[in-house]
Image (cartoon, rainbow, N blue to C red; front, side, top):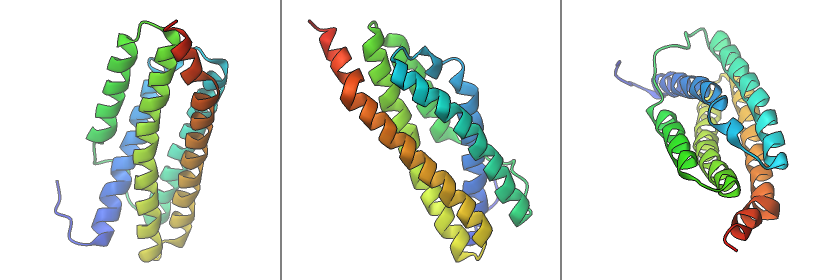
Length: 167
């Protein structure tokens, strides 16, 4: 690992880290998030899966704009959160409770990504990479929108369905 000497180095390191995280999430979708049973949740997850791939493509564009390679970092945080998602969902006996667990753990990942995209878009603007900053801010906006949709699904159906399994 190289030393981080300034904001530019931090920007590149964090950008590579997030790109690797997006790649890990893409790989996890097939085995973990497709276990959802609530139809609204399935719809949001399907939409998020395709949007998440678009985010990866936009991150590739950022690397092209700033003339840097996208390889070099491993996102241990997202890797750990994805492992936790799988472990937790495997332990859920009830499908409604599994849906609630998937929402919770996906929101953990999304909140991490919101923080990362927010910081990166700020760094990009500060470093005068304005086109890259716009792309990163667009990804940030999408993460916030998906988070809002998950909140609505949790509050309108999934949490109630999970509670009804207690009766």
